[in-house]
Amino acid sequence: MSLQTRTPLVAGNWKMNGLLSSLDEVRSLVKILKSKQAANSEIAICPPFTLVGAMAECLRESDVAVGGQDCHPDQSGAHTGDISAEMLADSGARYVIVGHSERRHDHKESDLVINSKVQAVWRAGLVAIMCVGETETQRDQGKTLDVVTGQLHNSLPDGATAENAVIAYEPVWAIGTGRVPANSDVAEVHAAIRGHLKERFATGGEMRILYGGSVKGSNASELMAIPNVDGALVGGASLRAEDFDAILEAYRP
Ligand code: PGA
Image (cartoon, rainbow, N blue to C red; front, side, top):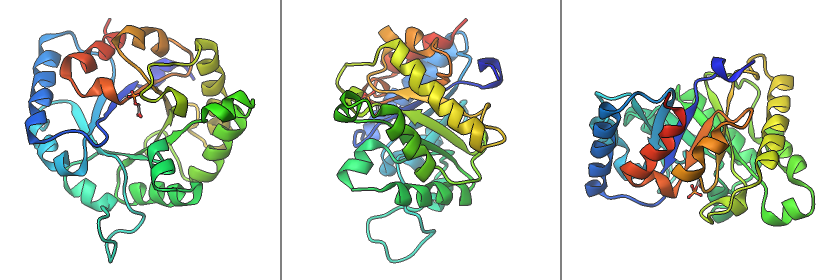
């Protein structure tokens, strides 16, 4: 299955950044996108929960989708401070990032918990962007492929399809550091993920696999040209319209 059959996705992850005033960046992005040739990709922005509804409203007339950054496995109930996938859908989200390494680390989320969150995303009719990736120590120990395929095996439930799941490979040591793996290392991990997906799922060849970790305008074209890299999950460079648009250049003819 070639890249032509997979529409790339460029998703911004705002993390714990953004106030109502930050929606000006989103309005600028829409203006920039209108003024340029369309990028051959889907685009999404995942702001903090407080901005999901307002951002969805801002982007209603555009092709840019909105996503959440996490959700609780349950639909509702006594879970103070949590947000369900249904609430995100209700606010206008289409995607939910699940299992980001910052959640795995900061909130001790296990593969099992992430598995139940992915199912919650599907229950709400949304698309899960499920993250996997090795730490620097694991890479140094030569465990990268085992770690990544182990996370896929345990976090990605049966029932994944090209429509309801996107995988994001994010080496933990590349997130927010300005460091990126060698192209050959990215290619090796993405090929291993593709192999896992094809083996387990009927549409595994059509599922999108994003690369994330220090993606910016200056390295996007090179990274996005690697086989089985079907887009990017972008943190820091998604906060400003111009920086985010520079990444989309990789998909302009
Ligand atoms: P970064 O973050 O682009 O700032 O490295 C990526 C991510 O954590 O999704």
